[in-house]
Length: 310
Ligand code: TA6
Image (cartoon, rainbow, N blue to C red; front, side, top):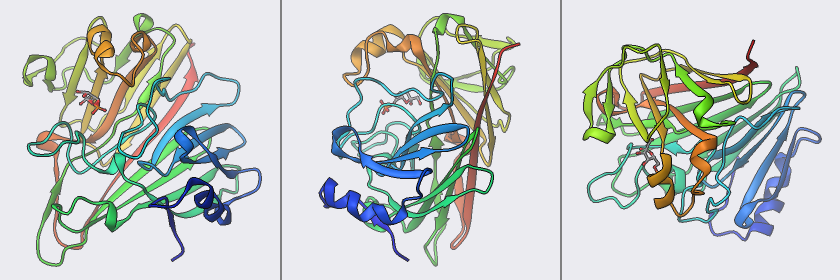
């Protein structure tokens, strides 16, 4: 199976290798930020961008509208850092981990391989990426990770994890850590999580529930909602749009806005950028972590769409 990953290739050579996957008018390749190879997708309804670095979708925008995904103006684009925006792939652990320097696992700082591109008959595009064996931390059991990105008037991402071992179960956390563009955080509410139990990172992961119909962001919010398969809606009255995040194979939803202090502490994030973004993340975290028997797979899908506010 022909495939491609950045590995130790130079970017120019890398781009030449990618050309075979080009689909005129639909899928093209260019040198992105930091000289990293970037995949440019154009459909009848939208544009998108994906980096092999992290297998990360960094841009999705419907024609004539503001981008749906947020990417920090200060994001690093280098091999030992995660891109600050778009859809970082969190795997095989969420958050910090004892003895591991990289929070949120190694998938988002690994070079993924492009294995397939396809033009969809109605005018969309499909891209399939694999995380190569070499990218994994040696301390982790054999597993395979596949990401399928489908771009139409919606953005669909499928993340499939397979336990490649022949004799042992494999337990992991996963999360599509999606950053969304907002007009103004003060004009935004999040719906779909009423009465859902969550771990509040602001209070040492105390377990709580919120009976309010919607979440307003007036300070740092860092909540891991558990045991929920529900869709979540971001209502943005400043951009007069609602963003719908539907998910399958995910029982956790994380809602995060860094607010003022955390924004200032992040060198790859603008001090004022907290006003134009929110993370609504879909995954399987904490007690929702997944255990796979040998040879078994688990698939998680997230579909992002938007519509004007009535
Ligand atoms: O998903 C929320 C969170 O776990 C926050 O606590 C914050 O750390 C955020 O992820 C970003 O993490 P990163 O490692 O990308 O800086």
